[in-house]
Image: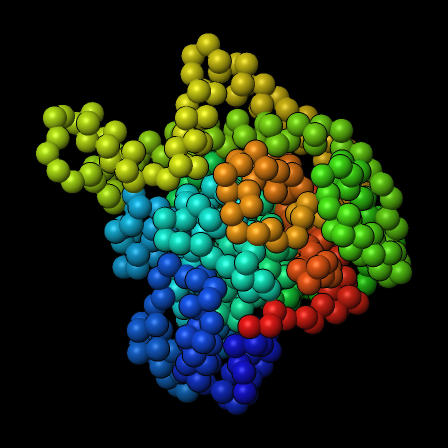
Length: 486
Ligand code: GLN
């Protein structure tokens, strides 16, 4: 049986009944990886030895000895390579961290480990999570399982491609401006960015600290709720981690959205959205209405400025966060004879960082420099506040908001690589959500030109329950069953 094709909740049922062992399951997933990874290149590092020679067997023994089984026990997971994993290379897809082996594990991953998941490997990404195509990786390009000539989206393209190609059952990604939802959309899987502060960022290599958030990439909404259940919760190691009660997110999976008020975001349905994408979303709107929800257009007028604000705030924070990579404390250091420390720093950084990362550092440093700070960074923060207010106002009237996740389906490898501004446009629909700190999910809502389209569903801060409820009802009715032909 092709176990790799199943979801975590389906596999859990089989594991619980003893129909399969964790070892069977992991072997099957690694066989799948062997069969397709050459073409996809979803992983930077595979942890096959630990998984098959020790972890899977250990979990099987525990289960045989009567240890309680949790919904994620024994499930093969893929982790984006910007989350620290003790003893396992964590590169951020950068040359500068090409030899970095952390001495600790990030909280979100630790929480998965506590449920006895089996880590399959660390997934490829845009360097330091900067990008929308996974082309900005020092370790090669990941390909979209639906069409190997196209990108899987980014920056969590490796995680999304791994799940879409059945090279992992579930995965973790990180989302600063769309990096979970956009690749999930382009790869035809489910991806969720939780409310800012719901999942600990401890051990997530920082890109833009006020925007970064870890979340699940899964084959369906049920698995998304299961992973979310596991990774949420207060962490004293992250000062922005929220102290709130965590509900059981599976209680949102009720398949009933009668009477729910859904706002369709006007600014994210017009110019720049491919017509085939808009058609799919229009059909999704009709489907949601057929389920008893009301859909009405709503305007959030400041969203037009979200992209500009983001490309000041995110690089500003990045330029500060990335100052730590100097050849002294982490990873790569330039070889050869050097005059002084300054030369060591600058050569290390010039050789260690890729072009997009350097572009962000320069943009950010400029935006923060004396004389320009108020005009750029200060102004962008004001815009951010206006966007937060727009969302607050919209949520007075609506339970959730919807839009396309990405303005286009998966684009050709190389198509936007040389044109950063076009690349940045890939996140027009997702970036406002990070600026506002609210939760958002992408669920598949059809195919256009044989490539997946994602529907984005947004909720009030900490209202993941309603977001999941709408996503689940949509998924149940829509029944997206297509798989890439690999
Ligand atoms: N594509 C956006 C950027 O390059 C978002 C990346 C992300 O969410 N990590 O900044």
